[in-house]
Length: 243
Image (tube, rainbow, N blue to C red; front, side, top):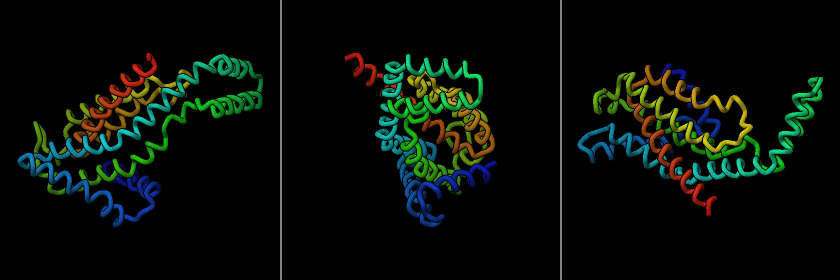
């Protein structure tokens, strides 16, 4: 499972960053290795605290991207309400279509309407996610391939061995974080995206119960920070819209 997970992440990073293994390690992974050790040494050798603090720093630095993505979601929701009668009319004709060809025409018409008004349910921030992937993947490798870290303990578990309770904690936090992020998704969001609150925790839990506990700790810390960012963004945009 660990090897498969690593292969998937490496392929993603190579595609997105356009660099080879050595350049990727030196440019992105090594700085995270050094940063984790720096914080760990500062806190009396606690690599668990090192992972949490580095994850916190990375998430804070990437907050403008998250904020941009969330702003697009709120804008899409506002536009969706404005053009809802037109969207509902097309959806009604699509349901009443007698042939696949007619449904295809109406589907295309709906896509054109979404594109014209910037309300595409799948166009709510893909670029920020793609930009974050090499960074988060580098942090993953900095943790998962750190032999010194694997011998350390934190709280009740060893960072180098699997821990089901840490994996369950990470999965639960991811569920809450995804639910918060989807709170302002457009009403006609595709059914597949509505399944994210259930799929995302499984994608964390399944590898989390086999990977070293340092990984679920990293995922849990990232999800917790993302929850706080999402909450603050919700409050900010609610206040902005109210005023």
